Image 1 (cartoon, rainbow, N blue to C red):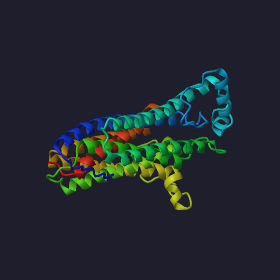
Image 2 (image 1 turned 90 degrees about the horizontal axis):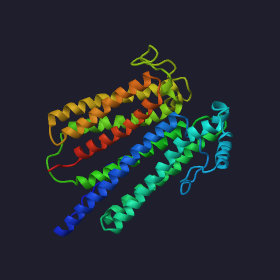
Image 3 (image 1 turned 120 degrees about the vertical axis):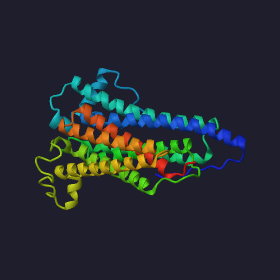
Length: 357
């Protein structure tokens, strides 16, 4: 996500004002990035508890308050009782049980609204006080647009769970929603880093190190997207052994679906095997990148070792989650750690791509 932000100052006073403003903008973007991490964690918990289909109305500009009367609770519960998830999975659930799943989805949506307010409000305030460079306005506008698209895509995902005979959301839509969240997080973080560490001339990083960092991060991102299909198909609840899959290195039934390409997205054995394979490739590349960073030294050592450590930790956490048959706590932590791995990749990639004085 290579944004080039080199703004030559017109004079010394302008440079001082720019630096002061850049620091404030970067701090605001870091806060927004942290809020996105929380949002992704809430999304994981919502999915794992089956809470995501409990609210059947989409009110992006309203809906700030929860139900305030028993009549409103009963109205929402009556809507929920019409969808397949209730009829086929939660039939017999009472109002108290509905409230339990409602609150997590409500918090998830509320937090999304708060991110929108924090982003738009912060941008307006910084612009009015002269701290937000005009050259940044198009990029900030693009990020806001992506955030709005994410809200629309979230409803598009949820609505797929209302289809006949579907008790959960579409794996395709879930992966799109998760993938766009990762894109927004990476873009916000990259922009903040551009402001904190503008490009300067100096010694370039070793080419092998740069390649290893991008390989580790690239495989990690592909693993995350594959993880969306693991989550969407609930493939993590099968083949709960490691390193073999029910005693086999290559699972039986990998190519059962036709056409073959469907196996990558809908075949439980193939979906989980691909997720494991990509994760292992990311691990190997991360270890290599860490070894190269130790040899290269400063200023690349710390960020690259951070990426390597994050990928190793995520790999171990993934194994633990699989062996424990995806409890809500570990599953949520695994999804949260994924976005932290992405953050570590953005930081490392940002450092190795530029010339450092």
